Length: 158
Ligand SMILES: [Zn+2]
Ligand SMILES: [Zn+2]
Image (cartoon, rainbow, N blue to C red):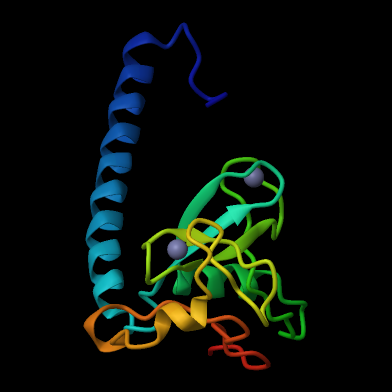
């Protein structure tokens, strides 16, 4: 931006127009890439995970793929990374402060389980495992379950 000076009127306008065209081309190609990229995701990577930030209380959703990317990004130079079920909060920016939420199959609401052993819905009081009983996971995208690994620990793709 510092190369565009005020006294080079028409020249800076030309540069501005050129930059604008480049931005538009970049945006369009990103959109095209994004559409295909999403299509190429596996069913598992497309799972939408709900999180709640422990810091600011913001609730957000993230694809399993995006969570895996965040985890891989935090890997050390040797490619080792820590498996996590937490995500960065997009609202306040706190690292790994988004806690995994489970979907209660009884009332359909998302809640943060107080413990992995006894995940009880904070809205209707139903145990998550109880609410899963008789529920057909084939009918819908199956969400992550407590203690289940959503990543592939120890191995880095490529
Ligand atoms: Zn937050
Ligand atoms: Zn419930």
